[in-house]
Length: 379
Image (tube, rainbow, N blue to C red; front, side):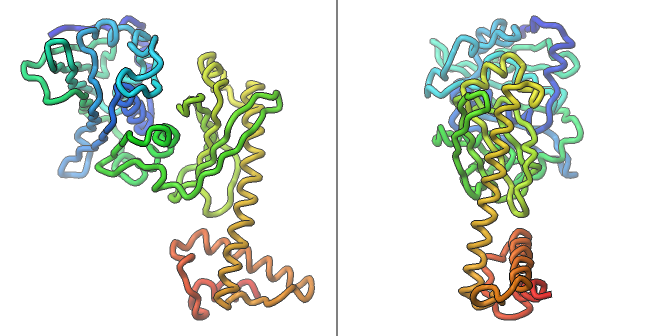
């Protein structure tokens, strides 16, 4: 067994070990993808009482180069990816550069093992790298006598830290991962990520996608991709991405889309990589260039959702007119009827937003949702 000591201040390393559960998993998935994995599987292993015993992230990538662990694992910032641009096998753009992501595993549990198999000139060789949260600057490396059947890495996290209950909600976790990896999975459709056996597929969980081109008030160009999700998320976010679609920083969009809309807005520009390296993205509105991009993005989001609400209202009213349940034939007779129509239409959109089967309803009488809204609209 060999000891590996990370060349950095311990308090700095400890600061790298903090993250939310989903952020920590995201970093481990990125590490797998940067190792040329095509299939990445995340499994939450529960005990008989329903608690979490372990978390496993496994991949079919090229493995960790344990033969150079002193350099790649022992030096913070000494990652092999520092001088690379793309993965060696598939040519995919690399996400990480500084070797910090692995420390996020300690946000999930106190003990972490990297069980890896790599290909050498003499054939396959397997190793186990292990570390503990109490001293994340120290790792051990052990050569396994029997190599695995193929290259790849399994990260096993035990002595779980509480609370990680959010990871027991598989549908929520899939949604969060889909939101984070949406642009990457679109660029590389042959990559598959699974959580508890469920495929992370942004297309399945997204309702619509719209692309806008914008300029900040200072003239810099960017693309804004607005993805609307089928399932409820937290507040809408604007995610700053580099030109390859990698998320660098996210902020609250501060734009209310209206009932029934859940979204993430991806702001993509080559400029953001430089701002990120200079620690300027995290300043948000306090930095003039970042603020200019945010202001332009929010203007687009307000216009986007205003148009989306109007389009949905028109679609809904056409359906109701075809079903014969719209209570106002022809043009409004007077201002009072015009006001009543507006009340009716506002109620209709609210019911649509909160009724899962509303679109499929073929209205037959006052006991149906449309009948109820019609009575409210006439009140």
